Length: 93
Image 1 (cartoon, rainbow, N blue to C red):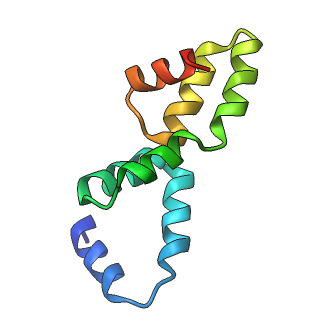
Image 2 (image 1 turned 30 degrees about the vertical axis):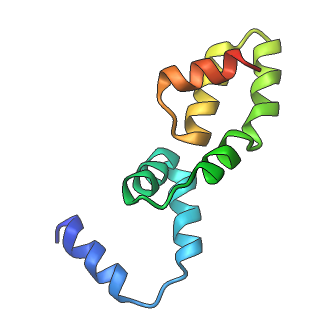
Image 3 (image 1 turned 90 degrees about the horizontal axis):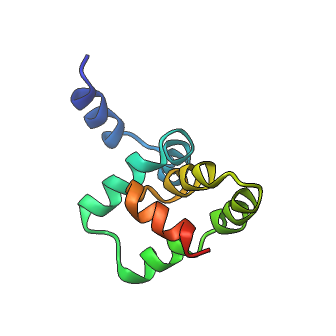
């Protein structure tokens, strides 16, 4: 069975969509963020909310400990942003 057919079967069933999104976000946050951006569901206000999310305090600690690359990875995993955007965001901390 291919993924397309599996996805159609999932969509047609009774599911807790919030929990599905949480599980996807935990395993592959970039996939969830990309899907939301491509769907057009994302607004400027929501993007600001992602930017202000909890990754920033942990990233500040990593930078203070000399682990800038780890901070950038954390940012990318938390937001789904490109390497350049994550690097710029971490440098602004």
